[in-house]
Amino acid sequence: MTNDITSINELGYDVLATVIQQFFNLVFSILVLFKYHFSLLFTVAFFMIWMLLVPRLFTKKLNERSVKVTKKNEKLMQAITDVLEGFDTLFMLNKRQKIVTKTEMASQNLMESKVSYAQTMGNMSATINLVSLLSQLAILAHAGLLFAAKLVPIGAVSTASYFASNVFSSLTGLTLNLAEMKTVQPIFDKFKELAVTNKEADQLQPFTTSLTVEKLAFAYPDRSELFKNKSFQLKKGKKYALVGPSGVGKSTLLNILAGKIDHYAGSIQLDGRDYHTISADTLHEEIFLIDQAPYIFNESLLENITLGQPISEERLTQIIQQAGLNDWLTSLPAGIHTVLRHQGTDISGGQKQRIVYARGLVAGRKFILMDEGTASLDQDSAQFLENALACDPDLTLLMATHHLPPEIKAKMDAIFILV
Image (cartoon, rainbow, N blue to C red; front, top):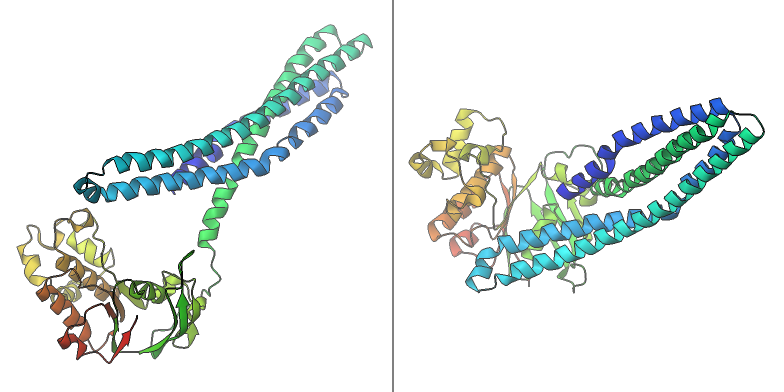
C-alpha cells in the first residue's frame, strides 16, 4: 500500500500541477498564432490530433507495466518482511545469506519491471517528440507561405516558429504527463476491487439460535482438498471442541467461520442467514477469534485491552478480574498504563492470551472461536483460560485443539473430530 500510494503521488498528484501549467501555456500560444493568422490553427489542429492519438498506442502496455511494477513492489516488501521476521531462525541455522539472496532476487524482479515500464514510456516519448518536431517544421513552413503571400509580416515567421514550439512542447509534456497519470488508474482499480463486496449492507441481528455448517469443503489454490463434506451445528450458549492432529485444517475451518476466508464450497448459515450475504465487518460484531499468536501493540496495557473503545472504570475492573489479569496488573510499574513492547516481547504467552480474552469481553462478543489458544501456555494459564471460556454461560464457544484435557472435555456439549 505504501508503494502504491507513492506511485499515485509521483505519477498522479505531483504531475497534476505541471499538467495545469502546460495547459495554460498551450492555450496562450494557440491564441497568439490565431492572432497572426487563423489558418495556422488548422495546421496546429491537424498535428495536435496526431499527438493525442499517439499515446493510445501505448496506453494498454503502460497500464500493464504499471500494475506489474506495483505487484513486484509488493513482492519485494513481502520478501524483506518475511526474512527479517524469520531472522532468529536463519541466525540459529547460519542461514543469514538467505536474507541477502531473497532480497536481491525480489529487487532484481522489481528492477526488470521498472526497466520495462521505462522502455515503454521512452518509446512513447520518442514517438511524440518526432511528431512534435514535424509539427514545428510544418508551422514554420506554413508561416513562410503566409509571408510569401504577404498575409503576415516577416517577424511572424520567426515568432510563429517560437509559439509553435511552445504549443507542441507543451502538448508533448501534456500528453506524456496525462499518459503517466492514467497509469495510476489500475492502482485505484486494485483498491476498489479490494473494497468491492456483493454482501448486503444491512445490520445482522444479534445471534439468537445457531450457526449451521453443511457439506463444507475447502482447498488452497494449487493444492489438494483440505477437507470436504463437513456438517455440524453450533447452538447459542453451547460449548464445542474441534479436535484433530496438526495439519488437518482446524485453523482453516475457524478462519472460514470467522469470515477471514470466503472461497469455500458448501453452506454456512448464521441464524438462517447465508454467510455470503454477511459482510466481514458485520460478522465480526458477533464472532471473535482468539488465534494461536495474538498480536500485542506497542501501546499501554489499557489500549491493548480496549483498543480505544470507551468503557467505564467499573466494567473495566470486572473484565480485568474475569480475564485473570489483576495479580499481574498490580505488579506493573505504571499499572494499566504500562506500555507493552511490540509483539509483546516483554510478556508471557499466558499474559498475551488473557489480554486478547479481555479484548473480546470489552467488545461484548458472545461467540468465541479459539484456535489452539492454549497450546503454548503453561498448564496453569491454559487451565484458567479454558475454564473461563467453558464456564461462561453467556458464551457460545468452539475450541480447536489437538489435545483436550479431561476436565475441559467434560464441559463440552459436543466434540467434533477433524481428520
